[in-house]
Image (cartoon, rainbow, N blue to C red; front, side, top):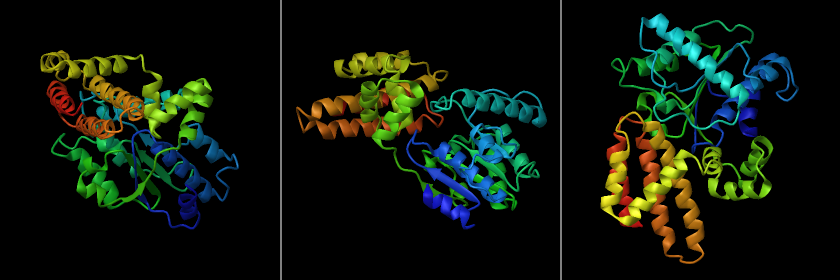
Length: 339
């Protein structure tokens, strides 16, 4: 982060950036910090000086900071202007929720950047800054951009902004699945890799911001592998996702007639978000079993690593137009062969 801030101070920071890295390692938090530094540099003050711009970014109230978040399905009734207005209102509600709860889980599996959001982003990019010398636009989870909609019009709207960004606009995109972005979009961005958090950073977050007991936070942090998203999943181990992951593993170990039935119980389309949540919980459960079994049987390490890799592969596929029933059946068959 110090190097990025140094690039801003020296005026060498790129105008269009893609922050990549695993889910839940703080890519959007880094984007917000970069926005704070950019605004403060323009005003000639230090980012940590508690100036007006710095406070506004931290409170998510800066008028020239525009944060686009994947939205759940809906809002396709009416003309372009009405759809953009609805998208703007939905984004405002999402930002308000993040003000109340800055530790948030990944978006629902069906959430996306719809065409209306892409058009709104294009409109915002053309506006004159209200307070600062520039606008900073953050497109979180940029791989959730729906390119199939309206003959790729959503992607084309973003491309126009990336190809000819105005001098007073900085675009910060984040993605845990950069390969899901169109090559034409990726080629116009400077990619910066964000590494995993340390166990201590995850532990401190769980203690200081979620009120977990230190011992429990330590256990969760060791399973989270530097991801706040995985830590949240572990912290909610008794949730629906955790129970679904337990049922899935039990069915896999009992045989095809059981895991096939479990797959059929998965709604084919409407619960894609629940399926993604189950996969996150499943990854955490496999990781916990790996830690337990590795001490007893070193040969089990490879099979658990392969199973976890399969789960991650399916988690990425859920962002696309896949049938959860079929995906669960394929995953179950593959995991059964390994475990």
